[in-house]
Image 1 (cartoon, rainbow, N blue to C red):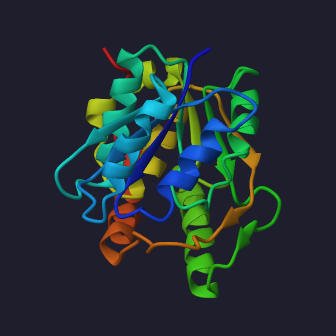
Image 2: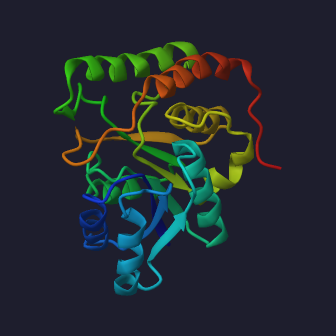
Length: 239
């Protein structure tokens, strides 16, 4: 079974090399695709310098400018399907998601789940080093999503996710509308509405130690108002 971790990057020079080392040191083999949106700090150059160390396993797609988290993942999903991967993972580069948990997400996926979410909110609130304002915004955003969509997912905004090949081949990736963090909700909601099996694994989320957060008010507004539209939309399978 071929497994691919997709990591979008923008100015992650402090984190990218340690992340590469960590993913390739795991007890199970994972390939890695970096999608860099023209980082001026040289993130992409580091990846390209290290590709020789991990021939055929470390890949990069370079894009010009900040085109959005959702479009980065959609680009990666399509590439992964073309390359024949069986399980495709989303993960941040800043170590807020523990790469060790990739193995746990994969284990649950092999038990018949089409989408597995690394969830901060199954067992209370498992978030470290966030200011209270951001923690409350994130937690109540997930509550809001459940109220509006009726989707039984505790952490709908999570960005640590495993998709099976079946899931990505079922979803119409070209129909995904939201490009920021609302993308995460839309993908899970579409999968659930199409009858795919969605599960959650409890993780501990740790605020980044290096670099700057990419969260903005515009991203939050897109997610807030976009979620309101989801129950009104007809979710179609890929033709």
